[in-house]
Length: 242
Image 1 (cartoon, rainbow, N blue to C red):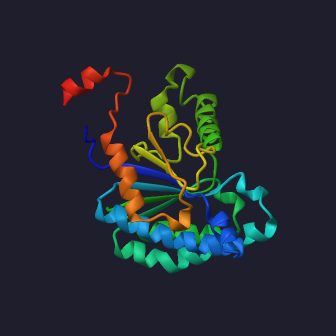
Image 2: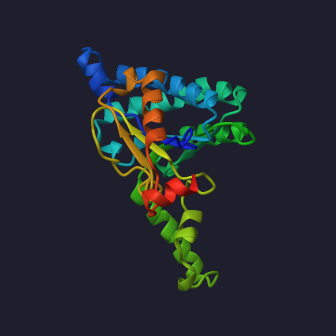
Image 3: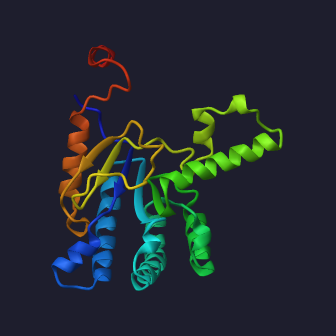
């Protein structure tokens, strides 16, 4: 069985803090090391002609972390946008940030908007950064938009369907993830793309994110290629279609 390369890879980049703690370094050093891993993974996806790479950078629950760490993460996010957006643009990468951006500082919101605008016409890899994002939040904000249209008379309740909800999610227009990867040893999706991951293949690794590399990504992609994706059909039906 060979599914070919996944069109859309979604990753929870877990283990930065533990990586730093294991090396007796401040946690922020783990996050900085994690940014280097992001560069490697983006380069891999460009070469492999992956259509979409979605990265869970900061969840809506991460605000509960110590204030100092949150502030450092915001500074790192800003600095990374400033240092990387030109490279992304040069490599024909389109950047899209999803999540409730209203919680960020005006300066960071402006930088995000500028970065998205700078790369919006690029036709290569779609790099989706989920920041202050939660899967439940995504479904709720979609339902609110639909409810407003029902109240305004633009839609009837009978018009509500899976397709309509999809059209109001932050990922509308992108293929659903084929492969979900989580580093760091945990085996849960932690409120990431909960609607979009319905038929996604999962791959978990104990490797902490800063140590994740192209060889490990190869292992995940090879695992995906060997799986039979049935989407409710029998294995025999799938084999006959191929």
